[in-house]
Length: 367
Image (cartoon, rainbow, N blue to C red; front, side):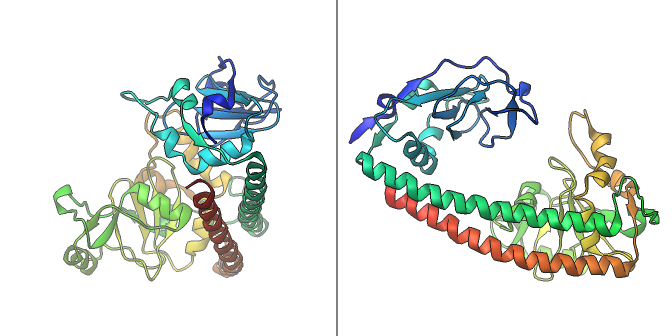
């Protein structure tokens, strides 16, 4: 059946609550224009099965079947019984460009309610809609379980870290404390000017590229330098080696990447800091997970709080105080991490296949 979304929805009054009023903890989900729901309120505005559309910035859609609230930059619709509302959610999630195409305006773009209501949709019969929802619910739940396993494995590593070394903030185990600058030479790359960048060759990582590698393992850069320039930098000692640590210095601060033997890339100066010439009594894995510990991160999180631009300078990195346990303990921890990483790799492979299955189903039903 060919129809429009407006014939399936009952639009609801808009909220007057600002996004900044959301809480870290609360009784009810609080949706904003973000594609991620991570805020809460202690009261609710809507109490029926709904779709929630973000109206500012970029396209987002949420489905909710429990009492919730939203910020003012959302459009909420109930179903009118003419379609399985959750199937419409899955349809639009798989065809997010239908929403993205509606964002207009200079600066921060917005989408209108009228645009959303006029989006066309070809609906199968109701029994087929219900079957589609049943299938996607199963696949979505599997993805959720696998992501939960990855979170639990990360928590296990952090728990093991605290068990072996204690909280970096309190140092209850009375471990020796040294400055990061005593353990590494800390600097950045040699500057690469725009006219030196190429469209092929050796990947040149901006901070967004490195962040993506840290989060997903995917390296899909859009900038490169020539093989000749890379070899010249390498010969002069300007290229990171296996075991060196790269640290994000802008945006999301203190995210770390341990350089692998197989890596071949160069990186943007200023935005990414380079820790190298590691002292023999310290392990890269230990430092990597130290950066994950809240007690350690407080050293620079408190320094940059309220700053106009978040920046973790090389000077700040050098001054960070590091608990230094015996190398044998660091290596024991590294062995534990390696075993956990094997488990994570297996879960990620399963997750990748499941997400591929979901994409294939999206194409089959909605493509």
